[in-house]
Image 1 (cartoon, rainbow, N blue to C red):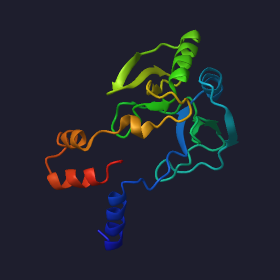
Image 2 (image 1 turned 30 degrees about the vertical axis):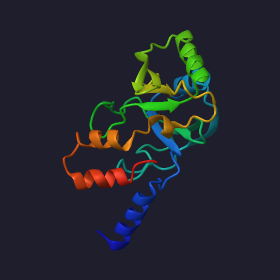
Image 3 (image 1 turned 90 degrees about the vertical axis):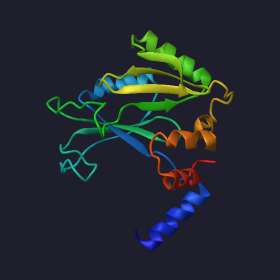
Length: 205
């Protein structure tokens, strides 16, 4: 490994601060943009931010541009200064297995307790089946429920019921483990104590 890279990694670990700010956007695929927008805008309350058509088609590997030219690409405000984007692929495009290696198993959105209950009721009122929850998904108190969007994408809505501020979600605090608990869990992944110690050094404080 390059010495400069190693030094940078060491400093990042020592500070236990992420180098990135967070998600700019998630880009998902639909074959029905109208139905998808109806669901995300009307049911989940995500405002439209931007819409365009892709330019020339690019290769499927190495670049984010889809292998289809002139298809709709729409960006939605999913909160937290982050965007949710959709490309509309042709209906002939192959389907994916969300539980395959390298796939996105589900998307989880955060909100406060009041909004959590409100969104659950909105989904039920619109005939959306709740496939799991509300339940404690991450101890001690992260409560969530699961459902599918019109594209059969698995979604989750999460909240920490202890949080009384609907805007300050404090997601990291809600999930943060103690060093001892994290060390025990990492022991289920690897018996390499040096590796475990390196991961602990970089844990969120």
